[in-house]
Image 1 (cartoon, rainbow, N blue to C red):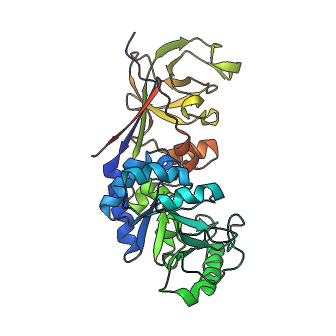
Image 2 (image 1 turned 180 degrees about the vertical axis):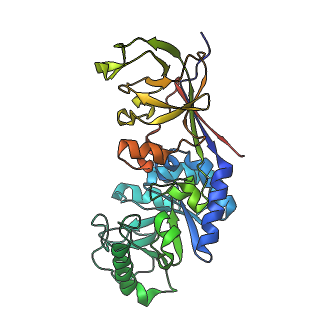
Length: 343
């Protein structure tokens, strides 16, 4: 039997660098803050952070103090902003690591640089009113809820934020824009833009990243583990979800929902030896079935993402967003690998 790789993810750091340059060009005098939470949206936080910083990103953003600490170890002089809520017991750790914290409620922590987060319409974490900033404050921020879906409401949020923070313009760093806003809502860019999904070459609007000159950085591959000929009436997989209506050749590929290829991706396309083929039947924990145009060799290459197969396309089939799919690709010792290449 051929040597079969279960699941292999390659991250193209040259694409990350390109996307950072695209964003910096759009932002002009606005700083680019690279969002690398959730292990860089599944791309590898440290590798992405280094690539973005080398192209000119001014800071890194993460969700938790725990996410920030490995970055601080490797990047001792970089500005790192923790966007999510921080527990009281984590504040001394954040202070020792010279992290900056977003404050959503309560008193300001001592000895830590903070960003006051105003809730202007997200309805989640954030202050209902902006207090008078104290000496620890270095930034003022809000989070847009609909920059990718409802520009009118995004403008309402921006106007609320600008009214509340106008007295401090030029005093503190004001930051509002996410990837969607940075790409299309020029007025939201202010002093800094927190860009995540666009940095990875994924369209925040769920369409095609090429329209913004973004390059997808993630490629996901496997191999054909088995080839089967189904006679009319034969099935493949759990529940006999797929029944052959005629003689049908299928490839069994050794990835499944344990690797992040979700059950609701039945019906999406992948590439088998460069040919676009449909995933059929029930996605199982460790395998998917793909209809072939004819018999092929075991070990033939399968591209799950890349070569024209995008996370955006998969997301439309699964009725979700590409963010979730990227973050859901899992790396298990003994069954999958992830490597970063530069170019």
